[in-house]
Amino acid sequence: MKLRGLYAITPAGGDVERQTRLALEGGVALLQYRHKKRDIALARTIVRLGREFRVPVIINDDVELALELEADGAHLGREDGNLVHARKRLRGKLLGASCYNEPALARAAVQAGADYIAFGSVFASPTKPGAVRAPLGLFAGAKPLGVPLAAIGGITLDGAPQLIAAGADLLAVISDLFDAPDIRQRARDYGKLFA
Image (tube, rainbow, N blue to C red; front, side):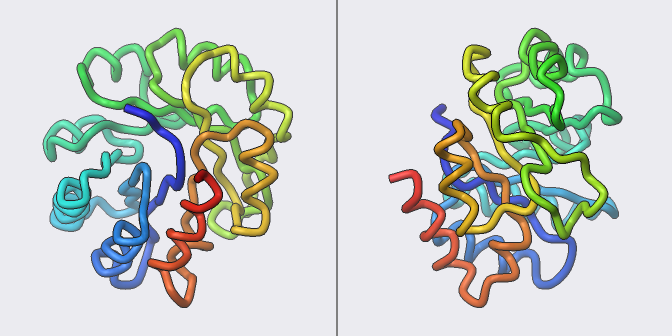
């Protein structure tokens, strides 16, 4: 599976099902269901939408929920559990790992079996304003790890080209996608950057 393009992460509020459908219609390479309150019905709907559009759906922070919903994988941060254990549970599924601004974490994540790694916050993020900033040089340094590299944090269409030039394969976007006046068109515009 080639992971390259827009990595849409579901927003915290609004009509998430409708917004997600619009993003998928515009073109998404990967979709993450991110939840603060565990809403299994909504998560199930997001997984179903992903299948409808043939886009892999990743569950954030929750291997058990990913397995329960037969999602395509899970994404774990530093506090979300052991990657080696998660890799064993998620046989044949995608495993992503947040590596913040730490190359050593990235190397360890790949050794543990992560299919892709994420660095960020690459820019100031409205979703996580206190997040540590990740320098763009991390992407070139991580290329030899041989897995797709995701950029996250404060990404906008204007800032996206420099991330792709720096070596990001996936752009994980929440606000700039789901707060756009035309979500479908915004997803298309991100897709064009990878064409």
